[in-house]
Amino acid sequence: MKQLPVLVVHGGAWAIPDNMVEVHLKGVRHALAEGWRVLERGGTSLDAVQTAIVCLEEDETFDAGRGSFLTRDGRVQLDALLMDGNTLRAGGVGCVERIRNPIKAARIILDDSPHVYFVAEGAERFVQAHGMELCRNEDLVIEREVARLKDAQAKEAAGQPDLTFAGTEFGHDTVGAVALDMNGNLAAGTSTGGTLNKTPGRVGDSSLIGCGCYADNQSGAASCTGWGEPIMKLVLAKWATDRVRQGIAPDITSTDAIAYLHRRLKGHGGMILLDGRGRFGIAHNTPRMAWAYQNTERDASGINV
Ligand code: ASP
Image 1 (cartoon, rainbow, N blue to C red):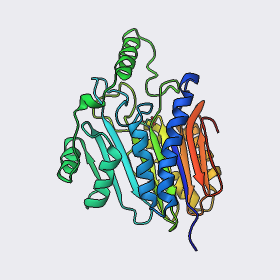
Image 2: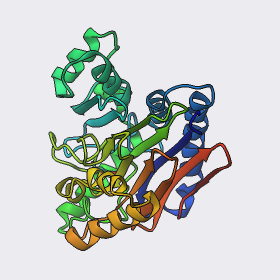
Image 3: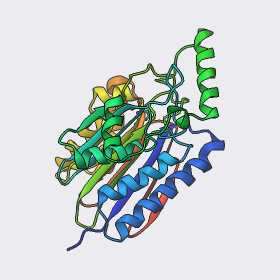
Image 4: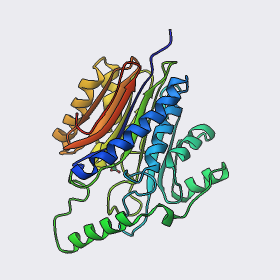
């Protein structure tokens, strides 16, 4: 019997201001619709996740692709991971500066390399050799982010507490998706520009296997967003999928994972989690999180769960 497909996407978890709610909702709904089209016509969960994430990377609302947060020295540095729950193949990039859609680069690595993870110029050279056109870093930088960086650095210079990484009022607009296809295969992906004013070379949780993203048909598929350092230390996506494997439902597990993140390290963020039966959870401990899901029975989207 064919499995009924499911797609869940997110566009970050933080105190999304009222005047940004609509654009976030529009962005996740568009990504959902595009990804769903893939699943509906019998496509793979891997293609659906990639398609949804490409839409979110192309949307300047989010901290992924063009329009991402800037590093301390005013550049865009992107991280992304894509993972196939059927084969456990994965592709990840960290600190890439000349790639418009890092999730496509992750896919090239997943498909064409015996390795799993490439960083910086090596990653750029590898995907270029496999047919991807590189852009200039300036092409990824937008005015809004130049102003945002200036503001954060002025506050820092004025001695205001550095909440850049830890505060929920600073954007955590990382994007991600998890999907289950008609053949019962799970996939997950996460893509990010990281945190505002980050030190060049910093890699967060998003693109690290088991931290901000994980997929295994034998357990579940997860994508996280939020303050990356605590999520990494707890290897949170793997923590959650392991619990699903033990039989705990994804809605309970995602809530438990975010509670654990806060209890253990005072971390904050959000998670989407899906199992092989199509059951899913969406949880966050930030004031808001942008999410959307679709299965054959219904589709829904929201900013708060
Ligand atoms: N988790 C990401 C990071 O720390 C940020 C985010 O979710 O927006 O790089």
